[in-house]
Image (tube, rainbow, N blue to C red; front, side, top):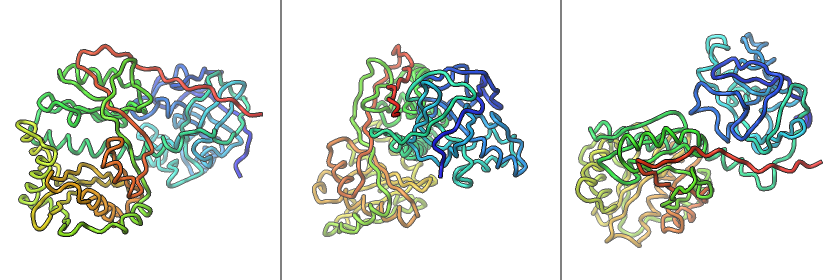
Length: 443
């Protein structure tokens, strides 16, 4: 059983890197401890990973295995005693001292910055996947204040309206989605299209002056790291093109941000989606085949239907086709063609990574719509995800669209809503400071 009370053993900060060094006190705000910074600020920090914690009990177990670990050595801000932190469910609150309230948000994955602490550089010794009791944990700040060594810690149940589990799942799903988009953007780059790509952990974005629109001018990651907005603005300013920042529908990334394309993020575990897919039968005359990425003719046929299905014209059609021909053979990319009575009328794509299948673009030609083909393509991709031993399937769809209804019918529930916020190249925007309402602490 996890203890319900403990205390702060050490408070640690650094200007970046490890070890973080002990201080007598620190003020805790929505972005973390004042005076603290991260060497990899596009991976650590932000409102959902504001404070890093580790139990002294875990440190002692790791040290007993021969590793040179000590409080602050692996970058945690608060070293605690008396509570097995990594066994606490996401959403658990920690009331610390007189004012501070934290909410456990996720495990902190090991990174290269801390590998010097471990024998042979094996930082996986504190991976929650390998050693569930010995991981560092991230937390959000629900109530601000000052923390000191010796402060009492009370373990509180998750708040009734907590969204902690949703944000933890979004971290996984968005990581896979970002990799899928990066695959497309890199394919465009390899096709000699002028596209500028930034890949910095949670921050992934592209700018493509020759292909206006959100597909090749999009930025992900602001939900986790709003501090990255200046870098996003600079990319589109230098490229001289409009960008679209993906962020929560109820959480604009900067004051006055204009949101477009209301989109739902849908997800389900593979087993439940597979059970729903089993009840769907392909429409009469429809056959669905997986594209052989080594077969140039198959790839060309897939690309042709995609371009016609989305009604792309002129340069947009040509450049999109060039990019998609290149992406067809990328690791984790899969394509399907749906043929009706022997005529190709629909295409779909998916991307598998981290045991998640991202159900990507799908298009049905106008003359074949209204026959359940899109739903059939979803069912085929879900079955493939199960065969690939994925644990989850996810997709995005315009809110209240036919695509969204098809996802819901297959059990992929909408768990988050987001918008694409238009960012003009000359826009003057300010980084939004994250704020979280204080939580009432029960007696």
